[in-house]
Structure formats: structure tokens, C-alpha cells
Image 1: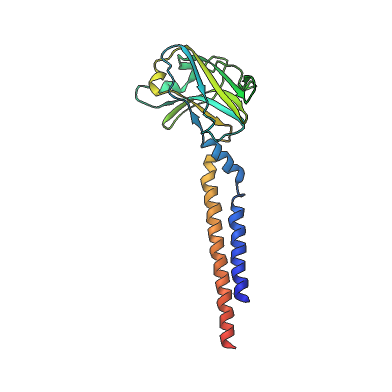
Image 2: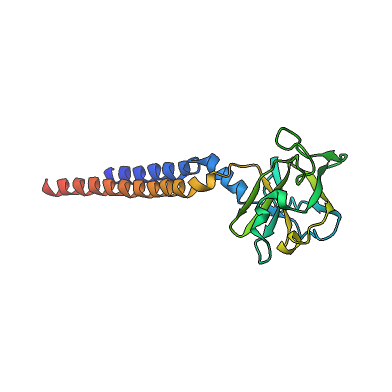
Length: 223
């Protein structure tokens, strides 16, 4: 009976730890999943004025609903000067639209307009959007939009002033769900704490059960 109890204790407590693991830091994991799942457009052509319409591939994008950020990304290739880190140095000027077509519905505007997204011309003097000039990519914020399930989403970029220099960087549109960018600094450590702690706890549990089991067996032999 003692052996059955020991085995049952290992199974139940072990199952509790494994199942409970999915709830530890669940919000941080959700934020990390969103940030790790952007979707990119085909290459844009910025060397000449014109209109570019991109149908967002919802079938391959895991973000179902919520706010999202649209940006222009380029590869950091030779020939792109470091001065591009400052948006005011760019020649490029464009307008951005975003709309969706619900199932059986009419076209609906999905462009975000608030205290931060104040204009649909993200390279104008009025705009104060984010820029990133690190790693292998250059990124310029363009707009925010709202995403709902079961909608076909389109973004429209109208290049009003071309920029042959940026065109050399394989420019694409990037769309990613709203998330906390700071989570990527903490997630690796928290994952190690969570998974390492669970493994150590299971090993200690097994060790305690084995000690109790052997102690019980020793007592039986002595008697």
C-alpha cells in the first residue's frame, strides 16, 4: 500500500507541476508570441511615385484581433548611410490607408487616429512615430490599425515623393500585433526560472519518495 501511495504522489504532484506550467508567465508568453509573429509584404518600389496596395495574408498571420502596428522595414545593406536613422533626413513622402472588408459587409476604415497617430503622412513634420536603426534592419513606423476576425485587411501606401536611396534596401511593409517590446528582455530568464524550477522540483520529489520508500523497506527487513 505504501508503494502505491508513493507512486500516486509522484504522478499527481508531477502532473500538477506540468499542467500549472502553462499558466506561469502566461501573459508574457502571449506578448512574446505576438511580437514574434509579424507578417511582411512583398518588396515595395520607392524609386518612383505610385500607389501600392497590399492584401494582408490573414491565413498565415496568427494575430486574430486587436491593435496592430504598420511599419516600413529595410535591410541594412551597403550604400545606406547612417544618417537615415533620423527620419527628417529622408526624401521619402507617402500617405497610408488601411481598410477591411468584413464577410458580407462594406469597406470599413481601420486606420488608427489618436494622440500618437495624428496623420496619415508618416514622414511629414507633423508625425512623431518610432524609428529603429539597429541589428540587420531599419524600421520606420507608418501607422496603427485595428484588426478584427473574419475580415480581409488591405493597406494602401501612396508614394508622393520617391526615394531611390531607400529603394536599395529591399523595402517591405511589416505588420505586427500590439505588444510590449520589453518582454523579450525578460522572457529567456523567466523561462529558465520556470522550466528549471519545475525540473528541480520533480527531481526532488522523486528523491524524497525514493528515500521514504527505501526507509520503509529497511524497517521491514529489520523487523
